[in-house]
Image (cartoon, each protein chain N blue to C red):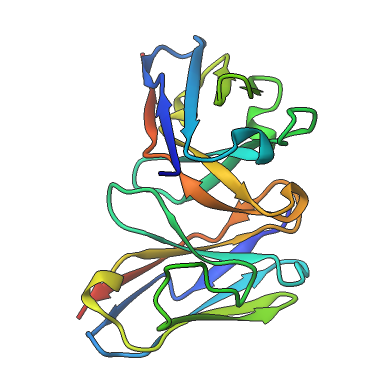
Length: 121
Length: 107
């Protein structure tokens, strides 16, 4: 079945780095844009980043620009999020989500189960 | 950035009630508006995108309408499994933005 599975979350000190992964299965990964969306504990949803299907176009929310890098390996059906200079306000469940439609105007039709990232000293 | 607002922020309703949630965008987003349902501890589920297009497998008691800046999600007859938090999201421009959510609770 169509599935996204995140991994790589954990507890990390402020200023440190973490890399999240998202493994896709059940669909042709290279045909789809994919996103990262996060949700702080007890809060709403916040879009983080997008990569287009071929990885050439990338977008970020302002609060993570120059700290986070999205990438993908279509040969491995895997999406990544390299998170550097982590801050306590990056604490959240991080979801990967598949783009629905043209990535310029899309929504998120398949979601992973999420991976928790906690930034704390 | 496009700001999204929702009303109400929470509502108590009974099984069988008709419920309408409103979402407003700070700028016109045409029909590039999605609705999601999220239950505690679970990932969101896409219900409608764009504005009035029901996703496959979503019950027909859900419907969406609107364009430009004003949108609504209607549940025609609330069922026990519909008690959840609902979010709108604009797909018109980057950064993608979500509304703050509407929590639907059992009366």
